[in-house]
Amino acid sequence: MNCMYVVSLVSLYSTRENLPDKMSHRKFEAPRHGNLGFLPKKRTKHHSGRIRSFPKDDATAPPHLTAFRCYKAGMTHVVRGVDRPGALMHKREVVDAVTILETPPMVVVGVVGYVETPRGLRTLTTVFAEHLSEEFKRRCYKNWYKSKKKAYTKYAQKYTTDGGKEIEHELNRIAKFCSVVRVIAHSQVKKLNLRVKKAHIMEIQINGGADAKAKVDFAKSLFEKEITVDSVFAKDENVDVIGVTKGKGFEGVTTRWGVTRLPRKTHRGLRKVACIGSWHPARVSTTVPRAGQNGYFHRTELNKKVYRIGKKGDAASCRTPADLTEKGITPMGGFPHYGEVNEDWIMLKGCCVGVKKRPLILRKSLLKHSSRKHLETIDIKFIDTSSKLGHGRFQTAEEKAKFLGPLASKQK
Image (tube, rainbow, N blue to C red):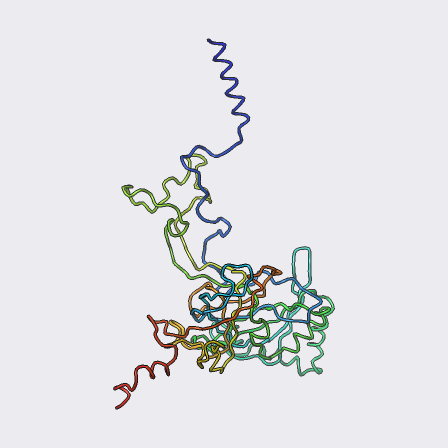
């Protein structure tokens, strides 16, 4: 009997050694709640977006810009025909939600050159334009009202002394030593009704061109000039949207991490994590869901398709071959919490991060697209411009007046 007991113990230990190491027993196996790739979940420092990566340079293409600043106006929907052979919806109509982003022209005010080092890129030198706008200078001050407003006054004299030799010298240094060339551009917020007077400044990388000199010449040709969104992006192109999400404040684990609620009769609340860890190690692991800040995170969304680009002053920018009504993109009563869109605009498929009026960045895609979905040509049949403040019935004010007839309030 004793011999059999010893043999069974030996066989038990030998099988345990062959078993793979895995977590302790639990009744149900499940993946963890929430992605740890986005830690730490804290409010961002980059309030108007930051481009962490630019597309790979292509020397065979002509010099071109790779990003643009825009402002979120709101959403609407469109009806379009699907042209995707092999798909279930091929040659049928679908309704897509779209986001409208207002894109007033940007102004190029400088160029900066970077040299490659073993520790990454290092700034070699920066050259600014001779004339800089007030909204650009406002961003250089904490209090514009009390300041002397002397920013860049001495720098501008470099263009007049010795025929601008120092400026040319710095541009030649960029062309000779630098491998990455970026322009400094700012948005024209005064053209929008945002009650903001300081311009949003950003660096935009120049890709293309045979060498750095071609990039520098391209950048210099853009000094003090406006660049429009249709000179950077085109219809049916896939772009990336960079910005800050809508802030939600301090929230609990169920909303913040998506953990399962505890049973109804749980003492002291049920929207909690029941066990936040073992006795030892005697501290809470970083992988355990906890309550805290939710939203106002910096995010980059890939592959948003450009459905349409509209121009300022085009009263028929939303006309289509199937809908000949002459109407602009602003819906009846304006976009809620935004107002009217009076500058250039771009229409993207789906939603975008952030609240209305938030400054976002559009960047050229980092990927080479090959799927039918990404290469599809968009054929819009109808763009909805009815009121977004409730259930809008009419597409234009003329249509509403024609339907309702003469109003008593207008006859006085």
